[in-house]
Length: 86
Image (tube, rainbow, N blue to C red; front, side):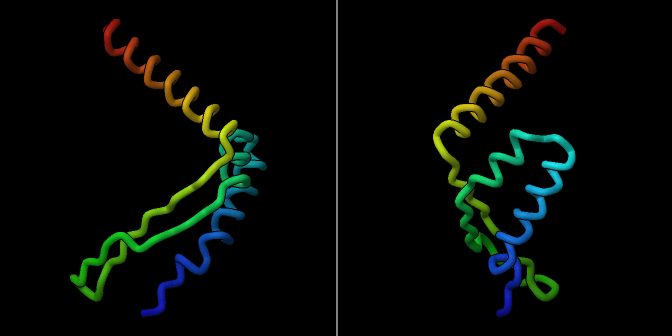
């Protein structure tokens, strides 16, 4: 079994960091750039030669996590208010 994704995930995330930087998506760029990344095989389906499933874990500094919670809370609140007002 030669799985490339776990070996190459850091390179792929580094590419995403550059893409988000160019697009001016500063928050997601900072989140990915400062994350400690781990990946684990989560599942395997042997059908048609096999499909592997992975979990990607991002451990981020507290300040970035707090900002993420704030963004999610704001978006959930906005969505909830939009649904209630309809």
